Image 1 (cartoon, one colour):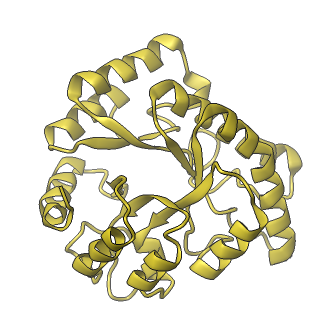
Image 2 (cartoon, rainbow, N blue to C red):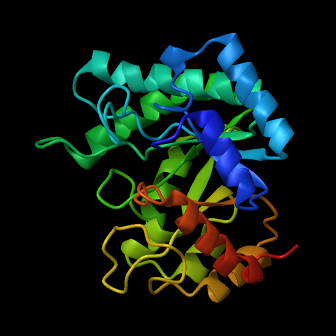
Length: 266
């Protein structure tokens, strides 16, 4: 996050990764900064470095406020619409760059005094506005449950899935997030396999505090995790997400790849 996007592409390629996740945010590909030359440059550099886009990350909106705001469940309709429009723009960005999916937040932080049901209604309404764009662009919109936000666990995601009916809707399964909320990962991977279209990978301490760690530094059993994923028949991307390691991302990325490679089928 402290490097321009072309530098980030170069560094990730040098670490030996086959794909990368691109942020639809500053400083990489925030829609407000788009130009055809900028996007063509990203596409060209990816091709030159032999990288495929595993995902477009449209979760955070630091260009406007922060990781979680504007959210899908803001009381202020105008502020909420910024999230809706950003997601539409990210879907179009994904199609232009050749990514098959984008990820978004699971509603957002529940505001004081707002009921779960009222927030869920706003979230579903927003998704219903965006999903036709996803279908038209041929890009999947993947919701990513997160501790402390509207959708945290498997039961809540399944409730959401019952309310949303679109071939473009799916799940970004963040392994660490489900671990934080006490899920048995192998069971949850099986339960949600129908919707899982992309995985985020990081480790979490035994305390289950939501702090992303380099795989191998926490308590997650990655042998069990990847065995469970492979048993579902999944053959897509697993993206290492280590955004806290801003000071030395290269070392974090290198160590993560070395640790995880034995678990990943060719």
